[in-house]
Image (tube, rainbow, N blue to C red):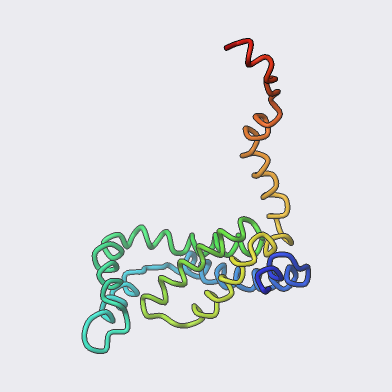
Length: 178
């Protein structure tokens, strides 16, 4: 029932637009501060790794191991990816462009922050991103998705429509060729 309402209702479309813009602003602001203020993820990663050891560990050991052996050695990549990703998620949600994908990438980043032991507003944002993802295209109808998604459907389904228009050989002609 709620799923149908989220995906098809015009009131839901308006509410989802407000939620989408709020979440997008949160991502854009966080990413912009990281881009302009100098961002280094190594301290955050080392703190999360430290929280994965001992009796009172608040970060799961498997995640701490991933951070220690994959993320920390590649910290320069994450120093670029995190702020740029946050800005792109923010812009995608604010403008309503690739809305579902932007919300999904925001959800992935929020999950990574939560797994690293940071609560902050990540839970709230993650729940709103789930609602945006569940609502599918309705969340982006008041935005550039209104024009972008139909264009991409036509662009990638040209071969399918061309094959559908191709004349079909009549059965009588097939019998003669055999």
